[in-house]
Image 1 (spheres, rainbow, N blue to C red):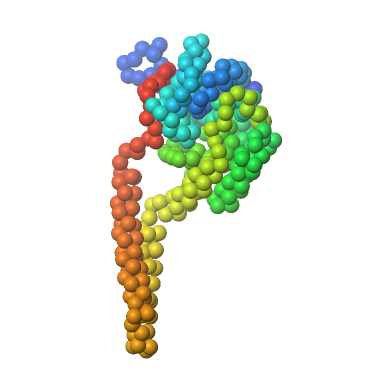
Image 2: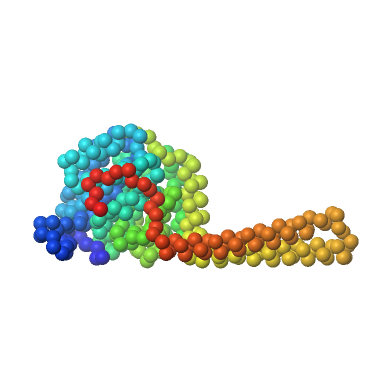
Length: 346
């Protein structure tokens, strides 16, 4: 799929899909060129100004677009507010989860349902500025596949949010070689073609640039505006740091050993079995050389434990190999369950 150019002042000419056999010309559907994804969770007060700002900015781009708002199981009136905004805006499409699945699942749903050739994601709390969207798209026009926002002057708690985010971003940059200063910024622009086939879980949405880089995508970032939260409350705390750290371990495993997990489990298993033979040899040597039996009885015990643990690791590796093959040969299951959708064509 060829991604359109010129999202700036030049605009984009819409592409017309081929007519289906036997269908009248009036039923030809033209997919939007741009999809805006907004995960929403308990942001009722922010919905009206957010939707108004996004539409004001995107309509000025002179291109076809859709706005996908994913209600992530909100417990306030967020979905009702979205329904009111949808009445006069056919470009606004709604997805409602059965319960709260998390921001990553909401973004994954947006990617799954997006019809545009370019996807832009942003938060619903009005801290991201929609006026930065044209700048992200202009950067894409320079030949990049992923453009990430960098909140240079971030308006958040310095210890709870800013420091932890910077530490996490530096760890991710060094671990995976994708040099970004702010992986946690939701305001990003992607060419849709580089996102197809991704499955995101946990807090993995911040690692999308890493996934895209593995696929050969060109990734960059630009400074964007960031505003203090004026309505609602933040949904994140320090516990998110631990989640990100664990996700980093998972991602590192997937990067190196997802296709052949036996290399990890089998390697550990063989090392453990080798250690069991060493400890058993030490036990035999102490028995004959020093005549020690009672006080050295822990050596045979450790030898048996190492051998048993190594055997279990190898068996786990074989099981993981079968699971990987099942994964590749079966239909993937999404990480969310949709209660209802509005304006979504299936």
